[in-house]
Image (cartoon, rainbow, N blue to C red; front, top):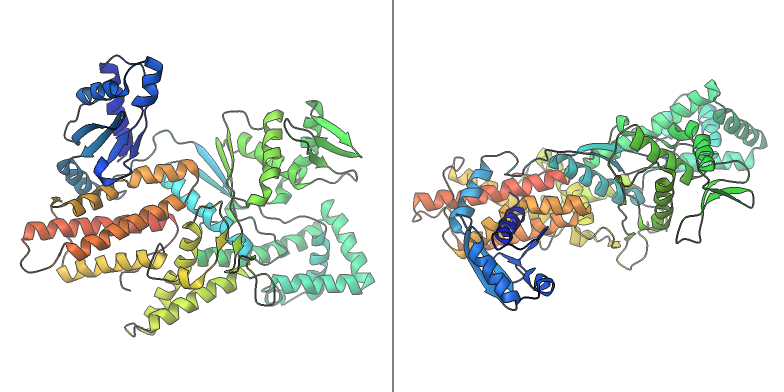
Length: 565
């Protein structure tokens, strides 16, 4: 249910009634409880244009708004605000209806567009490390969210699989022969060993250089070696994706090498459109309001990331039919994408109706504020970090001494991986992220464990009741009213998060919801013997709606729930 949209439509109808021409209005959640549930503040700005008293405009609106069964009261306050309070009956009816719907009342878009989301993008010559974590988690959450809202989502894993280093790597892969699978389990070590051979053995180095030339010219033997290396490298990525609960598959891979045949055409088209300028032998495009050019071909004839990115935009718009393209890449690439997007516009690869968005994110830091590293200063491998999260969750669960060994392993996997994902998503993505194990696995604050605990508590209440609650919700007090209102704000939250590519709106919403539920649980007994059956059922229904909402939103983030904790 889009509460704000419905209220805005009511206000627009009221404007028509009082013969005032307004294109759109905006209703916001009230900043304080005494202001009601929502507030309209537009009368003051409108008063300046109409040269009228804002209070008079607000009062005219209040008298013209059709309250129906949705609105309990409308009040003019301050210099011309309208405070809106929703009726208990309407809230009760809506939350009861939401529980009958698998989508909890969230509508699905009836005019979907194709959205391409470029995320994760590991380099095939290296092990996935913490630098890939944020792109993978944020990107997959946005893909899940937009898909849930009804968009036609196309995931794109733009892997780094091309370049001069691959001659060295496939030469070393050939040298090792059978049994390579075991060696490739640690790609970092494989790379180091290959580089050592390259530096120390001139014969090997010459063969590696030959392989680069042969690879780039399409030699079948070298291509097969290269494909073998990429296939084994991708299998390591897939292990990470499966562990993280990320929905990236081989079908989503669109590698740098896939655009090779198009790069010369990109340069040619830019030349034909009069966009290219030669500078010190390199071919560049200068864009408005930037002193830095976008280099698309080096003086030696080689192409750059920018050329590949332009080819990717052209492919995604012309072949995939994308209307919105999201690049989930760290903020250090901001200037690069600004230039690429401007050149893509100028070249006609991305007309004005195509949205190009750099979904940038900050760095992962340790508690001291430095980049997150191992104790010896090395890069933290992602597989090691995830296993550490599971191990820590396992230790916390063991302390309860309530589970079998199998249960501990299953719950620890869900809780540990979920804690890593939720902690990342709980902050504004543009901020640097301080990695803190203690905070991540805490039962207090905006953490995954806090959500899991609330969900498991509700499941425990329903188990003790002995059957699934039925009936209708009847709001008895202000605390229940606030909780039900928060439940019904789900769709507005999902829309805001999807429009702004901001997953932290989801976690903020869940934290507010769960905090309200905990207060409700403490103050409004559910299963006490002296509580009338109708009231008991009503409160059980509210609890169930809370659990279903937690599960749905965590599911969008790729986090499973546990029934017992």
